[in-house]
Amino acid sequence: MVTTDARDRLIASAQRLFASQGVGPTSPRQVLEVSGVGQGSLYHHFPTKHDLALAAVGASVAEALAVARAELDDDSPALDRVVAYLERPRDALGGCTIGRLTSDQAVMDDDDLRDVVTAYFVRLVGSVAAALRETGLPDDAARDLAHTAVAVVQGGYVLARATGDPGAMRAAVRGFVTLLGRTTKEDA
Amino acid sequence: MVTTDARDRLIASAQRLFASQGVGPTSPRQVLEVSGVGQGSLYHHFPTKHDLALAAVGASVAEALAVARAELDDDSPALDRVVAYLERPRDALGGCTIGRLTSDQAVMDDDDLRDVVTAYFVRLVGSVAAALRETGLPDDAARDLAHTAVAVVQGGYVLARATGDPGAMRAAVRGFVTLLGRTTKEDA
DNA sequence: GTCTATAAGACGATAGAC
DNA sequence: GTCTATCGTCTTATAGAC
Image 1 (spheres, rainbow over the protein chains, first blue to last red):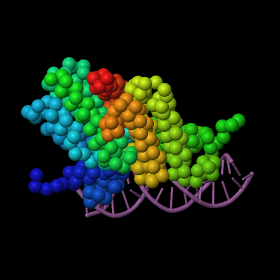
Image 2: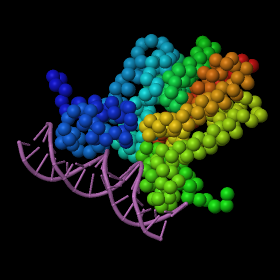
Image 3: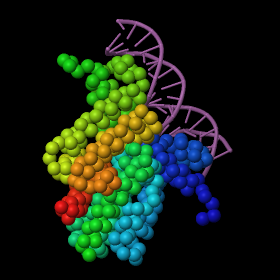
Image 4: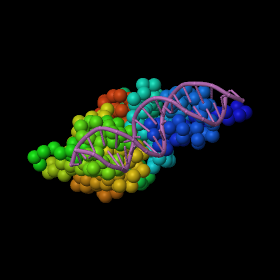
C-alpha cells in the first residue's frame, strides 16, 4: 500500500480509542477528530457506528489472535509455550483490548460484535488446550486447565486495573505457573 | 426502618442498573424511571451523578465483601474455605458486579469510585491470602496464590460472558482447584 | 470521496412552583 | 421533599454542495 487512506486511518483511530475507553463511550465524532478526516468521509466509509465498530474490533481481534498463536503454535516444548503465553509482558493497567469488550454493553448488545469476541476466546482457549494435550494431559483436564490459564490472564488484568498495580497480574501468573510446574514435574 | 424512602429506592435502582449495564451507560433519567421517583427528588438527594454512583457502588461493594468474608473467615479448614469461595455458584453470564467496574471508564476516571473498587479487591485478596497462610504456605506463595484464585474467578466471568457459556467459568475453577488439591495433598 | 451544516433526540444538571 | 419544565451540550446520523 502506497497511501494510508481515510478508511485505514479511521479504523486505526477507532482501535486506539476503543482500547483506551471502550466502544460504547467512543463517539464517531471523536474518531473523526483523532483521525483527521471529515464528517462526511466517516459516514461514507461506515454508514453507522456499528459498521465502524465491526471493522475496528475485527482488526483488533485478528491482531491479538495472531500474537497468541505465534507463541502457542511454534515448535518449542508444549509446556514452555503455555508458560510463554502466560508470562508475556502485558499492558496490565490498560486492560485486555478484547477482554474488556465483554463488559462493554455496546458490544454485548450487538450480535455481530459479540460473535467476534466469542470467536477470539474460543480459539484462544482451543490453542492453549491443544498445547496442554501435547504434554500428555487427558482431554478433559487439558480443556479445564486451558480455561484456567486464560482466566488467570484475564483476571490478572482485572486485578491490576482494580489495584492500580501491574504487579498484581504478575503475582496471579506466578502463582499459577508455580502450581503448573510442580504438577508437571511430578508427572514426569 | 419503617419505610423504603426515595433515597433507598434510588440507590437500589442504581445498583441494579449499574450491575446490568455499567455506571457510564446508566443515565440519572433511567434511575428515576426505574425507581419511580421524580426528577427533582433525585437531584435533591444526589446533586450529581457522581454522588449517586458513589452511594450505589459503595453499597454493592459492602454487600459483596460481606458475602466473601462469610465464606473466607469461618472456622472450617482453611483450604476448604478457599475452595468454597472458588466454587460458590455465581451469575457467570451477568459478570462480577464489582469486577466489571474496572473496565467502566466512568468509574476509573473518578478517583472516589476507583478507590472503592481498589479497596474491595485489596481486602478480598487479603482474606484469601490469610486463609492460604493458615494451610502452612509461606507468605510469598500465599500472596501469589491468593492473586491467582481471585484472578481465576474474575477471568472466569470474562470467559463465561465472552463465550455465552456459564460452564466456561466452572471449567476455569475446576482446573485451578484440581491443581490446588494435588499440591496440598503432596505437602501433607 | 470529501466537505460543511444541521437535524432529532438523549445527556447531565438547574429553576422554581407546590 | 417532591414535582414539572427547561437549559446547554453532546450524541448518532443525514443533506446536499463541491
